[in-house]
Image (cartoon, rainbow, N blue to C red; front, side):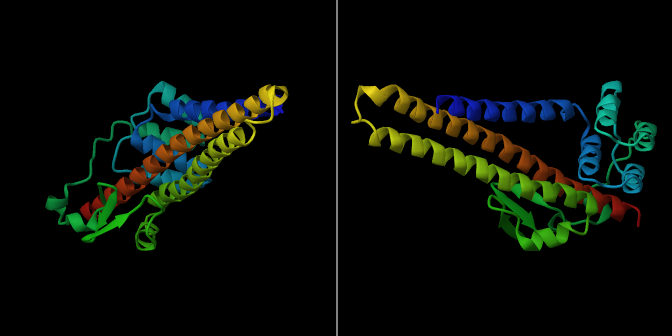
Length: 234
């Protein structure tokens, strides 16, 4: 029983390490390059990736290490070359006031709410269907929003599962306190193993939840930038 508990704890620790490694490998990329990487990982085709690179309003600012990161992630050579050719692109989206875009047409996040078209929508327990319908009009932003939904679901599983393990371990400990010294070591191992595994699971849930909201912020920002860029071309 103790070996099984240690195995579960080891697997959860490996999960945390893998998440940290993935975050570290992409953390130095510019926002535009991170969007490109997310699209590639989501299975977006080469032609769509090239279109995104050519129409991106922000530079990719790729360093040599960034190129190696994108290449290791499996991005086509043509896409990386196109992104490198736009490294010096300094074009930025025009401001809302100059281009006639009102603040109500853009997404804003304040105090746990998303503000859009004069309405406030909570997002802690999922994205409002009305907002999802708007964001589906932007295929690049939709990739981030889809990732947000998946990661938030995974976070709930880890967080509630961890809480259940910790509570279960505590209840088991109370229920077995009168079984004598012969079972004390075994029961103690089960209790601390369950509580430890639950704590690690809850920590993973918090990490995944943080990643989910990064995707949400990126998706809303991408929609805003694409809307401004489209308006500036009119």
